[in-house]
Image (cartoon, rainbow, N blue to C red; front, side, top):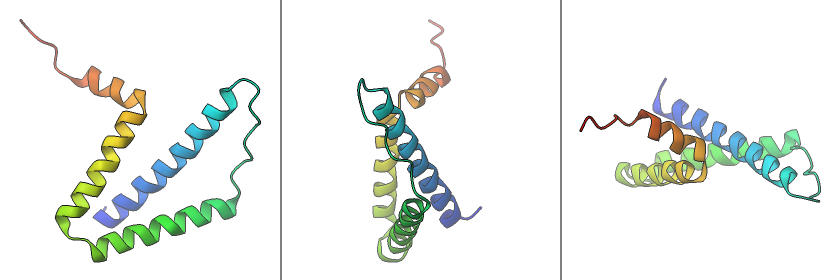
Length: 97
């Protein structure tokens, strides 16, 4: 898998998770209105926008800045989702002292 395909699949996955997370949070609130389901046009808009963003980053931004941008997104995703922090905690080697 090349870098562009990796980034594209990663971004699509993040958009899907964010949409699902937002739906779950808003539906769990007491008395909250049910969010309208994503329309295929909304998903196409997001997919196209993210594609344009990634293409522009790939062609217009130097490598060091790309790393900073994507690292920042990764850190934000990690902080936003407790299950990711739980996985990282479980993966840390246990102290033998």
